[in-house]
Length: 343
Image (cartoon, rainbow, N blue to C red; front, top):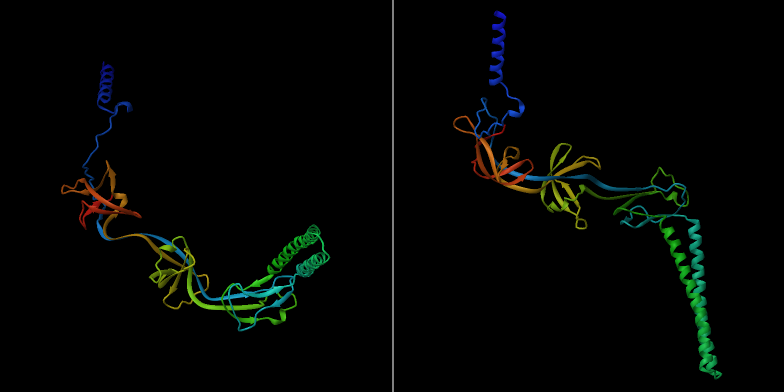
């Protein structure tokens, strides 16, 4: 009898648990959304502050001090001529060294000689034609006979002229090959060293033949698509080795992508040292702003959460301006110094 009573009690307990306990998953219902919520703990809050917002891009420049150029001889090439002397001023493109090119120089001399010879042949043929025409006229030759003389000599002259064009092309090719073996200066400056003994011999490829020194630039040169956003003459702050320095901006009139930064103080840095300038692409001054991550958009409106007088998390609508970096401008709905919930 006791066993039956215990079994019955067990079944009753199971029935009670089934009717009042957890429903199967398919019978669960979603909870209604809560507008106000009690957290039970203190909120993390962010204060609405006033300040400047800016979008910046980095421009990287490299330092160039006194411009120097050292010209070394080409390997296995005989230096034909050195065109400059110590103390001479040079500009970019001025010839400084020429090398022997026996094959090309021989072709050039040959072409020039044949050009001279063919030019004389043309002049001689024209002179003979004039003499023959005068002779025919003096002897009473007919117009057909005179025309035949002209045609005969003109064909010969045209043949010479065709050959002359080809010879001039050969000479031009030879000249271009020789020019390719002429070294030119790449900087504007003064020649401070010339190895005069190198002329006529194969130079030492580890020793410079010519040294040129240009102006003392003391500037950082940058190539950037953002250079057009830099204002010529503006005083800016650049960063060099994690330290800040004042520098003056100078634009390159011949290049939209080149900008220079001239430090206002003398720097003891090596050529190639890097500077960083953060150029402002967009800026909003003296505005109220919050982190954009805590301003929510819903139903075409922007809202933030705040803690009301009852300690509840409530919603407040705000109006916004531009979003810059990770911040958003607040134009209405909040006052400066007001706090909103961040978590």
